[in-house]
Amino acid sequence: MSAVVTRNLRTDDPVPVLDELRRLAGNDRELLAEVCGLVIGYYRDDRCAALCDLLGTEVEGVAPWIQIGRERRSRGNHGAPRD
Image (cartoon, rainbow, N blue to C red):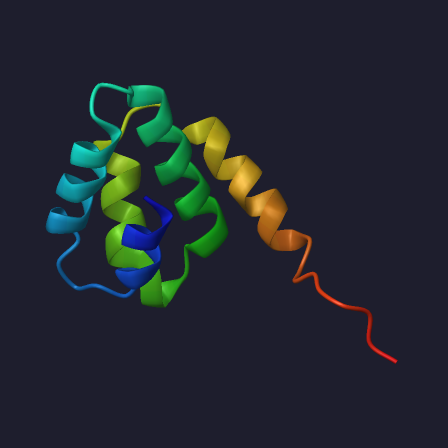
């Protein structure tokens, strides 16, 4: 599901992306809410607005996950220490 999201972050037509996420999640609405909420919280900016806004309005239960996504984004990038 994350691959579907990352390759479509800047889409102007987010409906097919949401359709694919729903298909992948199947009956697991909690999984769909988690993935979509994390995406919104982590990626929401002007470039990703179309996708994030659609996910936020069409998927129930994203609110708590949005906050977790924001917290993860605020931590910054991690990686090997720099000298």
